[in-house]
Image 1 (cartoon, rainbow, N blue to C red):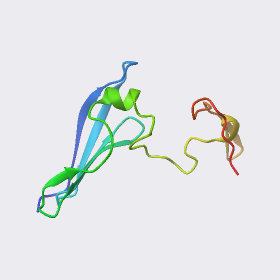
Image 2 (cartoon, rainbow, N blue to C red):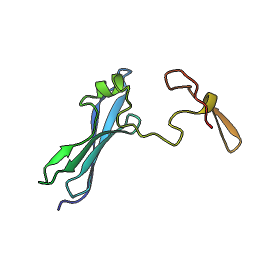
Image 3 (cartoon, rainbow, N blue to C red):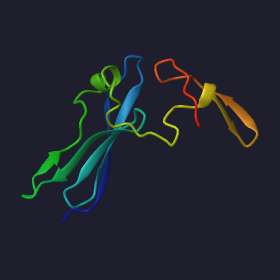
Length: 112
């Protein structure tokens, strides 16, 4: 058994020039994952098969460019409880009002 570990590396650069890092976490039992500093995107998940050979079981892309341009299915995203659907782009916390970008391809989603 190996020790658990965490590593950081530069994954690449986005089209707007921002650098994106990648964090690799290993549990010491043959399982590891990679998380991109691009919306906390889970980009790889390696688990050992019945023979102990690690296999990446996550759907996604091999290149940062593809994560940026082709991720219409939102592979690997970490979504909060509202998943980007803040009614009318206005969030109220402790009496303060925050105006957010209206996303989900420009539509306004309403919460129940």
